[in-house]
Length: 395
Image (cartoon, rainbow, N blue to C red; front, top):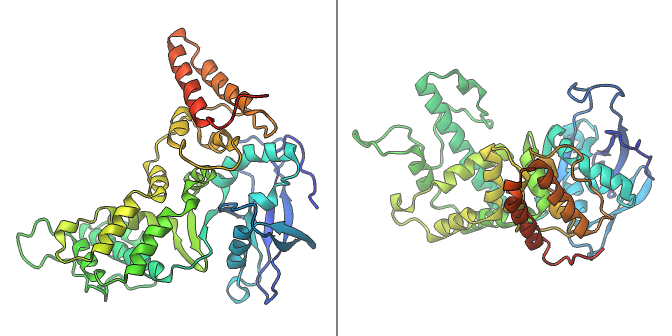
């Protein structure tokens, strides 16, 4: 089914997901993006706008589902099947145009180890170049939670708008309105952007937002915590895919929220102070505490810090992340490392784990040639032994 990619090239495939035309079977076609030869890497080459899917592969033992790719049956795992079912373009809204996606399980010939090795090495660039990364958390809908998130997003935008208006900043024109008149106050909580009493120096407009949300149903807040605790956030590949994205849209079934909006909401949620609100429902405080300790908040905070990441730091911060193939303990973070020359650590899924560990150790040996740094290299080797504790050093 797969048309061969040119060896050692920067070619990759797009998946054109066809619209939902009341056809039960999911259909799409594959096309190869072929960069112009001889063009320097720092020169931008025109290419179609595409979205990259970030998702869990899921349980390999669950029944597979059949879709049609280039007119032929193609089997995919359950989680991807439900993602495609929800992400299919809607004809009346999207003018019957296909949705252009990059999805590893479809765009890479997983049966061709040589191609897989090469394409995995390109994944960092693919997620960087994607117009948007679509984060698929779950096929389960959290309607009450997304209603809560929408209210928090509008509150954040309204407060920011009035703050910029008061300061005379021209940035107010760049704020998203979410379809509302930002000159009006919010209906829920009747958001008043002025202190009721003079001398109320510690007054915060968010105090009124929280009071307005105090009657939000338990299911909305507990669902919020559940979203941030989903196993999606624990997978090692998600770290690279989420951190490298230019733009993010987070999906749960047919519900979605912009990744930047979620980040703003989380910042304010984590700033919530229980002591400022008498008789506030305990389930809200408990849910916020769960969010503070969730895997999702750790990933999102890494994206917000904007700090350069070296390989040693990545090995440490991802040591609790999960993966099915132990090779991905290393290969899943190479695209994030800012101290790693291209090709220094080869990607080869047929290579023994012992040799993969030696590849990493060799990188540090070459980078830190001074004898004074030998204890540090030994420390890295010990850390690698911890990471691969369940993988014996056998050829």
